[in-house]
Image 1: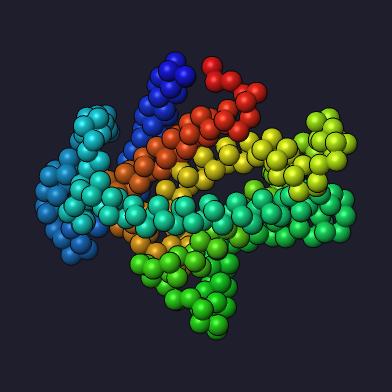
Image 2 (image 1 turned 90 degrees about the horizontal axis):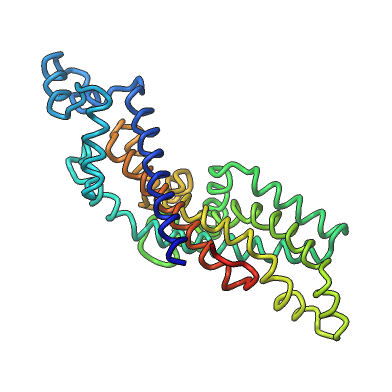
Length: 306
């Protein structure tokens, strides 16, 4: 276990280094000039150059990236160009909202996706299976803004069951979480259905049925734990995606998460915030996958960590 953790931590550090390099390089060659955003359209050329010199943006790429890495090693994600605030403080201020939406969204995805997949796998080849898989395909293909606006219009505007937008109560969380559940459940249901079909064909499932065990017990106790491993890996990826923020959903529902912060930074070419959010997302994906690998042996004892 210790060897695995050390190896994975080294791999994670290399992945984060690669992500930081590629992101920094792309932002460096970006046509948009952050200094112009800071100085304003009416600024003189002299003022623009002074700001560029103060921020160190007049130096070569290697110098800028080296300075950023030196700060990163010390836990410094930089300072926002426009908001004049530490990036780490800005991200931490948005973190509670992001974590709430992440937890609720993943639960909604699992509840919908696993229910659909089990129902489809047990009725393989029948009309119900085809309808459920078609529904999953539609939810996967549906644009985020369309589903978000439909949910908002139906359940907030027309029915008035939930607030139109905002943050602070459980009622504000329901619509964005269910929207994310609908959008993500298709991936879970399609993957879980394939896994369930393979497991239901296994010898030990036939043996369990031959012993007279009830259908619910066979599915929930014997089939589900062995079929759910691919889903756990997907959850690890989802953690990173959610930590990076679901920009469209957050924008429609006015949810003050990290995604909204990233979108504002992109519009203003606020490079330190863009870098900070990207690295936090990459770190969340790495940790999520590591957590999924560590949990897998407890679900399936046949798996051994090496």
